[in-house]
Length: 465
Image 1 (cartoon, rainbow, N blue to C red):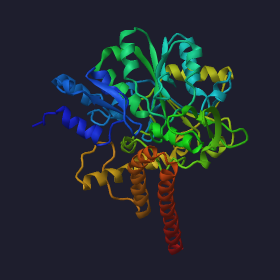
Image 2: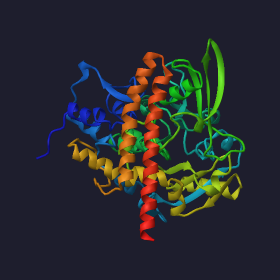
Image 3: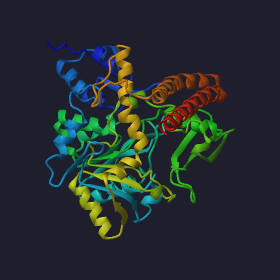
């Protein structure tokens, strides 16, 4: 007998359990839910007391629009979208694909203005000029004082160009999705894996969304960050909380490898406006593997390559590409229209790309794959051992992991859970050193585990010899 779902139980499992990505999908399903940013700098759905009753239909749609509770997983949606397309191929690590590429855009300033090879904005431009879309749903600077970025709708090329570059910052799309439901047109949207998957789930519920969102551009994402991440980086540059006005998370440095980028922050220091550039590697918290200010739901996805997107774009983190400071993309194409756009770009020399194989794409994101896919099994095992609810994923819980990798996962979890609490205390104390000291201590512990793990591997290899 199926247990009847209640909103309180759904909310407890998903939001309070730490499995909510903050996309805004629930606020699209019903106006009773609003998206708000909490003190940790993360978006979550909120319900007022007078709106606590939900109909059976609303509850069903809330459940089915959330990647952490839906009965459909990424493989189900991707198969439905792409499996019948002629010449489609499949790789378990990448999902479906028509073409695999690595390279950059030559045309205009798309590459210079982008985080890596410039393909995201360039594809939007091509779709718009060809009449495939009327507008783009993407992340741009926010006009609201309490946040730096937000999803907006752009209908002109100049507006589209304003959304260039990756933003390691929380956004939610309920307002813009509800807006396009009222404004007829053809749209393309860009987003992280959870955002694109939940758009696909919403499309299965709402035929208007399905009819109007024609293309989904996906990004590869190691994990989502809270708004406090940007604030913390700026604070280290001398810009105190509440004084940050803008941030470029991926400022390219001429003469440096593409993976050695900087941040550029602008804000008020002692009453005057300043712009400061610092290398990310020189800032505490810039180690992506350690994951400070990570949204906890990020540790419970197994979608590395944004498998339900029409095209997936990521950084070409490979030696042959990172030496170019201007940056390069990896590109996984699933939609024939976008494949045609890229082929035309190749023929006209407006883009420079290499056709690559599955292993090349995989190797460009190998560390991400290990954490997101392979080691998710251990994180699920820990949840089951603690008898805690967790989403059903495409991998099964397992304790079959080396001692050092278990300890690394344990430390990453500790950093993820502890840093938000420490940072809020530091902000209230007006004391940057409070969080710096504690985060440095956790980082040293993390590095010691890596060192011990390397020693264990070396000893094992010596024993084999």
